[in-house]
Image (cartoon, rainbow, N blue to C red; front, top):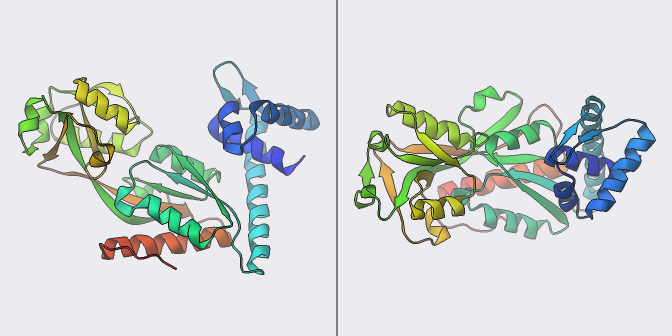
Length: 306
């Protein structure tokens, strides 16, 4: 067994795909597949059940991934501890992140963090809040930036609120709602909705808002790509909920934001496991991200945290 084989197996387990795992590990798919096969032959077991559509862990594979993730984490901690003697912070920081993080200026935060620690490698994984929290619990990522409505349901994770988004109703500029600056959500009971996927926390939040307004939304399409959602809204397929702060950045004409009398808001949080000892890299990252977000909240002018 070799370290890179463990990393390849963990990547396949997380992505459920040999092609995506190869991309994540920066190797060719044939190379990754050969190494997984070699590992399985050495262990005399099958780690993955494969078919033309999906890849799933076997029972033995699930235990292998659990133990392998601990080994990789310990190796990274060892490397980071040794780097501490030279005053350098090295290693790979894996961050899970939802797409709408404009309220905390996520891109600049990551850029400045890397400028302070240029020997790091950053691995940013996008996804829905629930799947990212699952990845954190599986220890395939170190930290997560997401939106979880009920953080008390996760006693093994420390969540810190770092920002807030307000969701508006997005309609075609030809839609009757477009002439109003604000509506009661109950007025949209007969509308067709383009909704978030069920693994995105805002699916639950927006569904609850509709039910509180007295109706179950007619969901005709689910999509996690905001750009595509905006184009579908502009074409007249339906209406959608999206973060107000995010919409202008797409520069898409022909759509209009409509505010809601009872606003839909989500808290942006970052989370990390509280039942494992964090590495020096994770501890340093948590401290920086916390200070960045506090500064972002307290000041409209961001200064680099050098």
